[in-house]
Amino acid sequence: MAFPSDLQIARKAQLKPLKDIAAGMGIGEHLLEPYGESVVKIKLAAMEELRDRPKAKYVVVSAITPTPLGEGKTTTTVGLGQAFRHIGRTATVAIRQPSMGPTFGIKGGAAGGGYSQVVPMETFNLHLTGDNHAVTAAHNMLAAMVDNHIHHNDDFFNVDRHSVGFRRVMDVNDRALRTSSPASASGLMASLARPVSTSPLPRRSWRYSRSPGRFGTCASVSGAS
Image 1 (tube, rainbow, N blue to C red):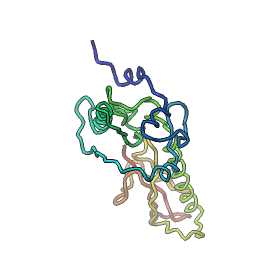
Image 2: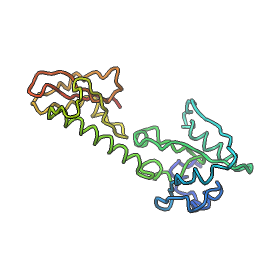
Image 3: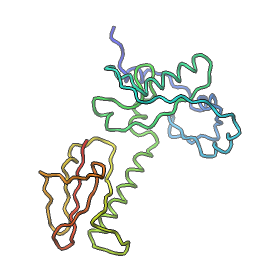
Image 4: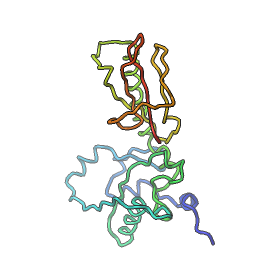
């Protein structure tokens, strides 16, 4: 009999009520901010209310090369949390929200694997509370404001338009961004065949440089998935 896939295991899992899970961590229901039936945030008020509790010990799992079956840092971390609970110890697992890029590739998300994973898988890997999308939207709005400011050659904010480096961001690996080069309103077209180097800036960075034309700037972006 074939071993079930991560998705099959996740969808068959019987989820406990979140208030019961929080109670096991010593967190009252009044400190929870629900997002549907399977996700909650813990309110910041919990920091003050629980500050007198004894400090806990923690185990850091890092720098593990995954096996061919995908057993890496997250799977090990979740498995440790399950093991501590199994022997009667109070344990809480803390991991980051997965990036959506690997979820749609061959790597999978960052929710663990097999019987040591975070569920529901789809909610955790794609949206969770929506904070990641909000940060992306806010960041790109600011990038668009800088771009528009330079486009209009407005000196109100005293921006050095020849040295601005401000990345656009997105949470998926988009190969089309490798050689994307939008030109300024002067009508100049940057070459798509030779992406602009962003060194020492990180890849997929906006970089404004001198270029002849009415507005004196040409915006080029180069990124790599």
